[in-house]
Image (cartoon, rainbow, N blue to C red):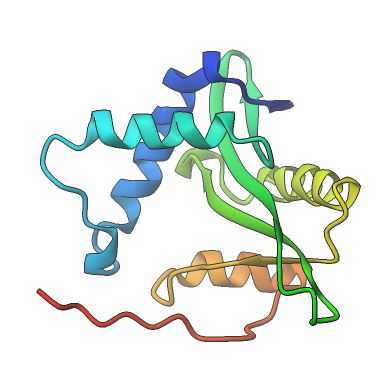
Length: 154
């Protein structure tokens, strides 16, 4: 079942968020975590849960938290036709529960909330090395509009 997460849910959500961070560690250096990173990452996640224009949707089943999606509403450039951006950030479904429609349910909850907040489009970023996630988002109807590039300076 989809629930709207609150700060009191931080411990359950953090387990999922760490799973996402660990999955991305090998995809690109930009995702590497520092040693002893747990406190800093937990504080960042808690900050996001508390943000006014952000919503964290989680999927709970029989007391287990098995998926989450973070979304927010952002004001874009007023001169563009699409100026009220819905943004989907971290999305994770526990590996044992993938391909069961949970991601789709989380997306529907996020999309509905973003539309209610006035979003005229939804954007997200996905690692170019995460073929499964790219396929998921494309099946929903997302398409590439830009390519995010990184230059490491160290």
